[in-house]
Image (cartoon, rainbow, N blue to C red):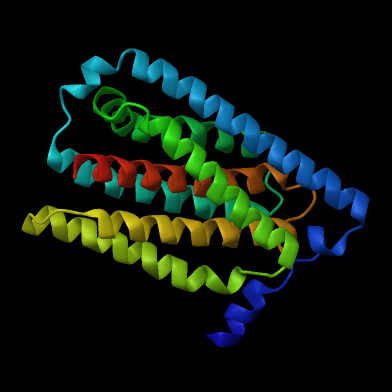
Length: 239
C-alpha cells in the first residue's frame, strides 16, 4: 500500500517540474488565467441566478441546508477526481474545457441559495467572504510557490476528512442535530489543505499541456473555500 502511495506521489513524466523555466511560466500563466476566467464566469452566472432568486428562496429549509452541504461536497469530490484524472491522461482539450465550463455552472447552481440568503439577510457578508477567501488563497499559494514543497502526501488525510464531513452531514439529517460553526470551521481548514495540495500538484504533477485540468482543480478548491468562509461568516452574524 505504501509503495503504491509513493508511486502516485511521484512527479509524472513530462510534468511542469521537469521542464524549462519558459515552459513553466507559460503553463502557470495559462493555468491562473483560466482560473481567473472561471471565477469571472462563476460571478456572472451567480449574478443572473440571484436576479431571479426570490422564487428559489421559497423552498429553503433547514433540511435543505444540510442536504446542500452534502451536494456541495459531492460535487467537489467529483470535480476534483476529474481534474486529477486529466492530469495523468491525454484527455482532449475540448473535453477539458467542457468539464471546466460544467464545473463553473454546477458550483454556481449549488451555491445559489446560500448566496441568496446571504444577500437578503447578511448585508455585505458576500464581499467580506470573497475578500477573506482571496487573502487565504493567495497566502496558501504563496506558501507553495516560495517553499516549493510537494504537498501531495496530504491526499489521503484530506480524502478521509471529506468522507468524515459527509458522514457528519448524513448523521445530522438522520438524527436531527445541527451542523454548527465547528463543522464549518473544519470545512475551511480542509479546503485550505486542498488549496495547498492542488497548488503543489500544479507545480509538481501536471504536464504543461494540462493547464485546463489544473485550473479546474484550483477552481474547485477556491470555490469550496469561499463557500465555507461564507457559511461561517453567516453563522457568526446569526449568533
